[in-house]
Structures are given as C-alpha cells and as structure tokens.
Image (cartoon, rainbow, N blue to C red):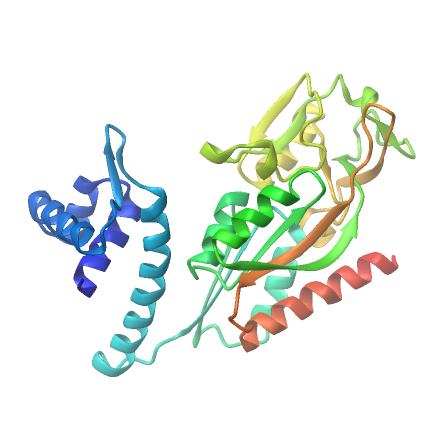
Length: 309
C-alpha cells in the first residue's frame, strides 16, 4: 500500500467517479482503475462499487477511507512543513446543523486570532455530514441535537465514526415564524393551528431519514411541507409563504434579524412535546485544540445569556 494509492482512493470518494478522479489526478482511467484494484487486493476488501452513477464506497470501503483520510492529512502536514518548507496555517473547522448560535460563536472565536495565520471553516450541512466531517477530521467540532426518537440511531452512527457527544443545553420545541404571521400574537401554538401553513425543514439528501431531521417532532403528520437547504431560504419562505419550522427557540437575532420570533409549541395528546438535547461532537480520544476550547466556551457563553433572558 502506498500513499499514492491512498490519495487515489480519497480523490475517487470525493469526486464520486473514476472518470472525474482520473481527470483531477491527471492520469488515465485504466491506470487509476488498476491502482485501486491492486490496493483492494492488498487490503482484502472491495473499497468501491462501480455503478451507473459512479464509484460508491462499500461499507468496508467507508471504514477504510475514514482511516485513509486521517493518515493522508498527517502526511500532507509533514510534507508542507518539512519538504515544501511552508509556514503551514493552523486549521479549524466546524460542521453544524443550521444553528445561528453556532455561527455567532464561530464569529466570536475567529476574532481571537489573526486570520493571516489560520484557516477557518464553518459548514452548515446535513446531519449525516456533520458526523462524517468530524469522524474523518474534516472538522474538529460538530453540532447537532438528539432526543428520545433519534438517540439510538445517532448514537450508533457516532460510535461507527469514533465520535463522542457532549451536552450543551436541553430545550423544548418552539414554533419559529415571522412577526407578521397570522399566529404571531399567540402565547403558544398548537399543531392543529399550524395545519393551514407549510412546515419548513432542512433537506437531508439521500440520507433523509426521519432520524436525521434537524427539526423536532419530525414524525408528525405534516400536510404541507417545503424543503430548504440554507437558513436564508428558510427565512425568506417564512415571510413569503407564512411558513414555519419547529426549533429549539435559541435564535441569534443579530444574525437572523429582528423580523422573526419563536413561540412556544403547545403539546396535546396526539402531538406531545419532546425535549431536544443540543450538544457538540468531537473525535473520540482527541482533546480539543486551543481554538476548539475557545469555540465551545463562546457557545456556552451565548447559551448562558439566552437561558438567563
């Protein structure tokens, strides 16, 4: 097994096809195919399934790629520092479900450092990708929630990716709407009162299971639903269509603006409330870096101000 073969395998997984990977690597497709076949023969597993949609990692291949990425990232750092003689920028990345407080804390964290010497990244993304990003060390910290419904599935996926969950805050469901919504003046909102309005949720892609939904009460029977991929679109749909989403109620007005509000969700016999446990995930056995510690402190500082208000 060579570093070149590992690099080839990682590139194929990122590109999703042998053809695109060969173009990115500037080698012929037959040469790339042969290199991967030799690698698979040596490690004794099939890393990729060849389908009409491209090259898809097998279950064993996903595990292999998890370790391969960690190894290759360390090689790149060593090569840059000792071979290319570069001043390597320290990297810090966060992958998160769509929480404005996560972005707020990220902003405050970056202010502690000179961006000339650091490479920062924040990724608001799908639940599945949050866990995978931390698992393969693409991000140091991930943010997501668990509750009684999804806990077993999320916990299993965290274990498979060698990640661990740390609690930040527990909260109940709120209805997030714009201030001119017909229900905006209510002290609380029932599920029945929401039936005439579209429920907005973040798209989860091919892994769009109820267990990966970012919105609490994801298994309720919603007659009207609209999917979005980013917070800006979600906010626009709230105004344009009187849409709503069910969330933690922890909203950063500084980033989302003052045109929106969170109203407590009023549970009933058929639609009980459910506590959300929002927390951060990290790679098991890897202590937080200095930047990671500051980021978590900034989150806790913000959540503390929210809980006291």
